[in-house]
Length: 87
Ligand SMILES: [Zn+2]
Image 1 (cartoon, rainbow, N blue to C red):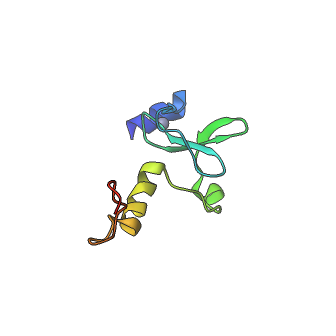
Image 2: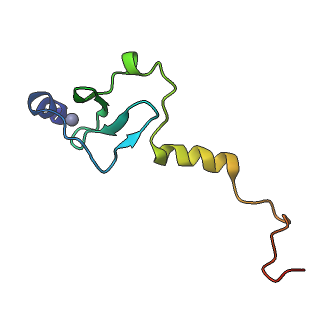
């Protein structure tokens, strides 16, 4: 891919709007080629699946929200709600 060639020459572009903490490190993706990035002690570097994926890292909040939705869901019909008018 041409974008990856540009990134390999000039470095990845950190997408600072997508940064999140996965419980261990700050993470984002390259704004140009989409490579997953991890902020190491020395700075940002590409996420290394073999080296970095041995920890139970949390996914990006937008990806996590979908699983939470499927588990939780809306309240069951007929669930008593607190009445604003009292009883
Ligand atoms: Zn890149």
